[in-house]
Amino acid sequence: MSEQKRQDIHNSNVPVVCQSCEARHRGVCGALSTSQLSQLSKHATIQQVPAGQAFESGEDTEERCANVLKGVVKITKLMADGRQQIVGLQFAPDFLTRSSSLRSYTEAQTATDVTICSFPRRVLDEMIRDVPELGNRLRNQALRELDEARDWMLTLGRKTAAEKVASFIYLLARNLDPEAEADGITRQFVLPLARGDIADFLGLTSETVSRQMTKLRNSGIISVENSRSISILDVDALAEASGGS
Amino acid sequence: MSEQKRQDIHNSNVPVVCQSCEARHRGVCGALSTSQLSQLSKHATIQQVPAGQAFESGEDTEERCANVLKGVVKITKLMADGRQQIVGLQFAPDFLTRSSSLRSYTEAQTATDVTICSFPRRVLDEMIRDVPELGNRLRNQALRELDEARDWMLTLGRKTAAEKVASFIYLLARNLDPEAEADGITRQFVLPLARGDIADFLGLTSETVSRQMTKLRNSGIISVENSRSISILDVDALAEASGGS
DNA sequence: CGTCCTATTGAAATTCTTCAACACTCGTGG
DNA sequence: CCACGAGTGTTGAAGAATTTCAATAGGACG
Image (cartoon, rainbow over all chains, first blue to last red; front, side, top):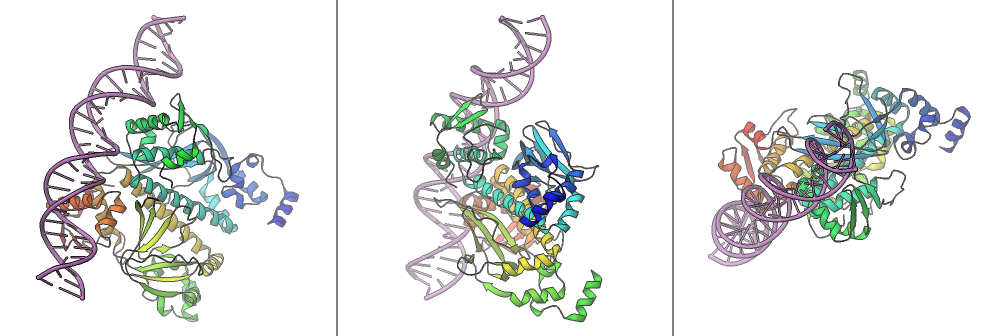
């Protein structure tokens, strides 16, 4: 590993586009040497996508996958009659891939302005062949997402509205800042989702979300400005209110 | 592939323990040649586990993973105050692995009498190195489970009690028979879960499950005997009642 | 035949939703 | 600069769905 690194330093430098990228350290790209990074970055494009836009899942174009560098992407499932559920939020430096089979109606949309680094799936597949560690990372990301999805199932199935809202804010605090390491909890941030979207994530109505938010504010656990800017005043109390998961 | 197979026929036969195993065809073992199967089966043991037993997650012993050959395994998450949620059911020929990180309190228990084929995780990891296809299958299984978990999030978050119960029965009908291919729907089976467990899977109470079951029976969609044996009388109506996911 | 355990059913209580009105923010155009 | 309107968020009150509590029923087993 360190030998590989030294060799790469002689060969070439880290591609410019990758230099400040979180994904290179904690994301899937961390499995690649600098020369492999160069190889991949030849096919990669960095894009700014405005908030509220559906991902063009590459129906006609070539299938692509992408690292989220900045912002939040929401993944939703919806029913024929319009009911919908947000089934996942991808934060930097998560990796976005066409979720296995898309049997049921699944869609990815930007929740905020988002920066992504995308490349053809084909290139990734080839690279997996050369770098088994890359395959491992992808499998681990899938397993981690599975575990997160299951955690959220507990929230959806067994928590009260109050606990759900607290869980949501606590989730954001733990994931919103890609720079933060390990237990890094962000105490102040702007909600990436509107009330309606929060409701769709929590299996509630926007009115109920609003009411529970007010309760959290009144109990001194959080403060809210402009109905979008959140400050967590008491992290422990928030964790407690979320059901202590 | 077919060349590989022919060669294996000359080398050795499919191990006895694997001969009637579904996992060999549709599960992860399908990636292995017969000689690799032989290699793996040297470390594998087939076990019968009675219903209602927690998996010994190998705390002290060596970490193992397993194929489910027969029966149903339930994966549950639970909260400090005892509330619990079943976050997944594993049917044959699913593969059971220590779910990534076990950050939150997760547990696997047999729902019915179960037959598993288990082996040390270490052996599997080594084999992945030699057979990249095995890694792919594992990743695909993880992605499939992720997709299933997300489907269930829609059920938990957005469906009514009636739709939830119908969805559950429909889920069983699609997964209970490992022999059934593709769209194989089992029309008659014994519920692998008690009412309380069904409730924990659906995010309801056992009383509500009972009531909705009665309604399904009264509307002629299913019939129930002994409160455990189910016959689906009208598959389309059941799919309709489940919300048409 | 009684006991234990699970399932069913009923009625009251609770939580969450629905419907409706109002408030706040922000941008546009008078 | 202010008024207006659209979109989003908040709050209230009535209604519905689900839970809780409690009683009854059904099977399995000694």
